[in-house]
Length: 309
Image (cartoon, rainbow, N blue to C red):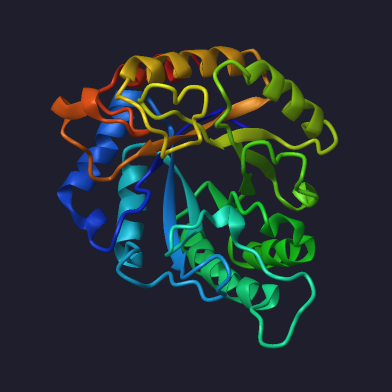
């Protein structure tokens, strides 16, 4: 597997956002500023709560198929390889890791079978687009911690996706969960979200390496990154952490993360989190507290690292 010099692009983009000239300008800047060769286009369908079973991937909260295909084609015209990542959020703000139902069906209660029926329709829709547009990888889910125990349903989903998409498939498990997925043999590549504390990378990489030995599959971090705010380098997964804007702390986090992972040949890349389709004003970069690196010192750290691979 080639090293993935990647970035996640377009998260939470709404219908019409990819049609705006600023979106293509943003993608072009992403390649120029960070030196990526892969882009992960991430989509966010919606269900009402963590305990409802209908997934909406056609509303105003999603870019439409035409603009998505056009953006994929544009990315490829820039020389980028595209990975498609359709995931799901809860409308009430609950993190998708908490989507959950009874393991034994109960009359009049929502059921795993109903949820997976809706989720499979969602995944098949975008798997067909991934095949049509020659995407180089397809990510069938992200950080679905409670759902991961439903091994039979995930295996069935993967089988259905393989009927319409011929490329490699991965699943993006959450941080610390790499050893809890029992169906890694069903995918081609193992991936996880690498939001690990700045002072704990060695321990976590040792742990992940031990887990990977039983599967004999390539691995990359489908997500990784750190907000630019004081304290975030120790809890990079906490997007709601209170703190002052601190671009130096974000820069330092990237330096450490890259230094630690470069020592491990089995880490085959990143889909860094994240680069918006509609960027903030670069003049305001030093005041931005988010994961974005546009106009911040971390931007150069990423380009230097990717250029060294």
